[in-house]
Figure 1: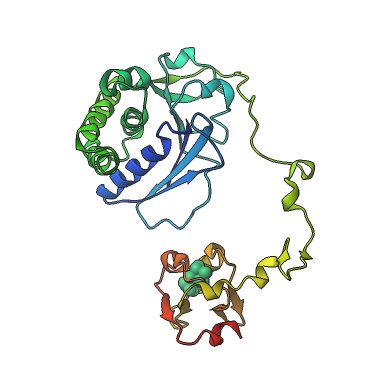
Figure 2: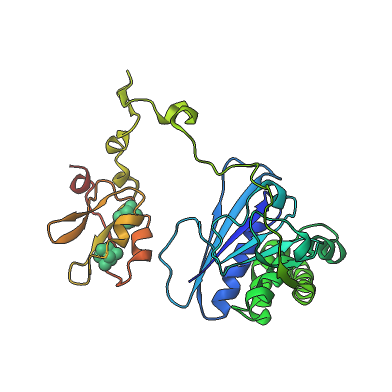
Length: 304
Ligand code: SF4
Ligand code: SF4
């Protein structure tokens, strides 16, 4: 599996880039998944996006901590964030920078591909939105799909969002970046960790996350464990059903169910219908298609 982490700024297209990439990978006949990471950020804030690519179906939905490739869309991030953190020893960084690789200082010497995507974007798109150019550099640096597949991905995703004319201009920006990408190794010893990874101590946690479980005058329960009184099963008239003959008890559904309503009961895996909101996530991750949605005729059956 190939794992890619995008470092960008809010509103500058790193999420759109990861979507266009995954679409292109589908056109190449492989599997891909794009995972944007949103907070309460505004335009310009540091954002991450992730993409996984494989020849077989992908079940992993976590953020990527040890990528094979990092893509940095804004070169000012190179001084702010330790972008190569966790990069595999044989991994590569794809950097938007006017500098040659040996002129760049990262926290450790790193194999990189660089391209001046900002200059290309300004010339071809009249604005410094570098996502398509960086996709061109990314494909050039690892060749996991062809440029023709990337072109189809950009036309599909950018075309839907920005129209056909803009999509073609973005393909052109990607093509120029593909041709102009250069390879080399950066210097190490850079002190680019001014912004730390978000690992809060207990003192830094927002107060709402550490309040005790309590019952309000209205009867509403708040705090940890309160979810048990929220009957999410009443949100839908369908419920997940596991075919026990097909189930191989891999527990993928257990790990992915957002309501924590799948559990092991003796020798079988079951769904507590009181909390199943029929989101369908378990159906999507089950490798043997053992789960279907069944209509609930009588709500008393699920909330009693
Ligand atoms: S994902 Fe499918 S096979 Fe795995 S435990 Fe759930 S129902 Fe069974
Ligand atoms: S449909 Fe959604 S809520 Fe219901 S069991 Fe599956 S993952 Fe959980």
